Each structure stands twice: as structure tokens, then as C-alpha cells.
Length: 307
Image 1 (spheres, rainbow, N blue to C red):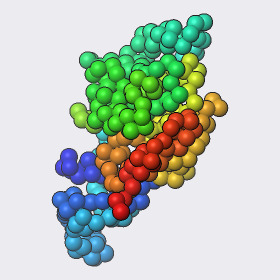
Image 2 (cartoon, rainbow, N blue to C red):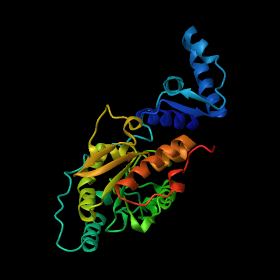
Image 3 (cartoon, one colour):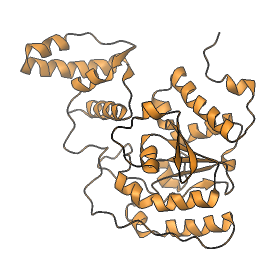
């Protein structure tokens, strides 16, 4: 299987898990899928032949289920799967020392950076990523795991998706230094490919959850923003029936703190339609209302269709 077909298949299956039903497909991508479907159809059945003769869906929305059916089967081990590894130990028990939020965060950061389990799962040049921002932040952004740039620098939200997140924060009238940004998992998940990122497993997030809970206990934010499906799973627990497309824009709760569920910025980079951007922005407007932030008419109109 070509790397292009493998990447397409993996992305389609990921979108399906996130509750996406229709996707925008470029001509080149559709031709790659349908050419593979044609080859399979010639070797299998007449029904396959009739499907293979459909032309490319040029700049149109296509049914995701049909695309996945036409996509090649996954290889024995995909980039989105964790490599075989010994089971993780029991999660750490965290007892915060006395002191103010700045003192407690500094202490907790030392514990996380020294965590043997976290260190064990790093790449040779990788760093543990603790979190960054204000100890008194009202808004707490929670992602799933560090990416390549985050692991390299030891800082959250510095890759392309992180840069987009910072633009969203700026559009809210805030700075990166006024909010808090972190991930549930404190190391970049390993996988068997030299490129891309793998979502953390429930077991990995379960191990790291006490560190995240301690960060939240110290900062005491008014709102937690769960960025993407994996972060929602880590905060609220696994639920095979939960689809991000259904729960996005709704409120949940973690340790009695309101949680706004929204897209991960990486999803917006891949699917940056005006409609999708507006959906994510409406989630941020809800957060701004909850935190009693001033909202201008200009902010209310962001990503609306032009009259």
C-alpha cells in the first residue's frame, strides 16, 4: 500500500471516530481512492465494478462511509496505534504542599519533569511538557498530548495547531500569558512511524490524569476547554457512544468545573471551512459569557458569512 493511501485511510477512520459524516475531497485524493477501488473491483465482483466506474467527486462533499469502504485496509500496525509496551504502573498519588498557586505549580512541575514513567516514554531528544500560563487563569485549555514541536521544546502549543490556538485566544481579547494551556498526557505518544502524531490511549491518559487534576486544583479556573475527542475522553472517561460531532459546543463537568467541548485546533487546520470556524468560535463565545468577559459586536460577528 502506498504511503498516500495509508495516510488517507487513517485520516478517514479518525474523522469517522470523531463523528464526522461528510468530508470535502479534492480531485487528486478521490482519484487515488477510486483507482484502488477499481483494482479491487476487477478482482472481486460486478458490484465492485459498478462502484469503481464513478467519476472523481471534484470539489464536492462525499459520504464518509463510502470513502472508508473504498479506502484500502489498514496495515498490520498503523501510525495511530501504540507500539507494544509493558503496562503502565498505577497513577501517581499527588499531595500538594502548602503555599500559593505559583509555589504549588513550581513544585508540581518538578514532580512531572522527574517522573520516571514520563521520561521513559520520551524520544531520545524529547522533553516532558508540563504546561504554561497564568497560575490565576480563568480559562484552562486542555489538549490531548504534545506534538513534535512541543516535545522538542518542552512547551505546549508551539506547533501549527498551537499557533492557531494562540490566535483564537487573541481573538478572545486575551493573551497566552493570561490563560493556562496543557495536555492530559505529558509526553508525546510513541508510534511506529517517523511522522505524524498518535492520540494517547485511555491507559496513558489515566496514568497522567492526577497531574492534570493537580494543575486544575491549583489554578481553580472558571472554565476548562476540552480540545478534541481524546481530551474529552481523558476528562470525562471513555464512552464508545460519544461522538465529538454530537457533543461539541455543549457543557460537561470535571471536578465541578464547567467543561466546554470543542474542536482541536489541528482539526480546524484540516477542515477550516467558514462554517467549522464559526462553530468553534461560538464555543469560545459561550466561554467568554461564562467568564463574564466583554464581547464586542466585532467579536460576535467573527466567521459569519458576509452579507
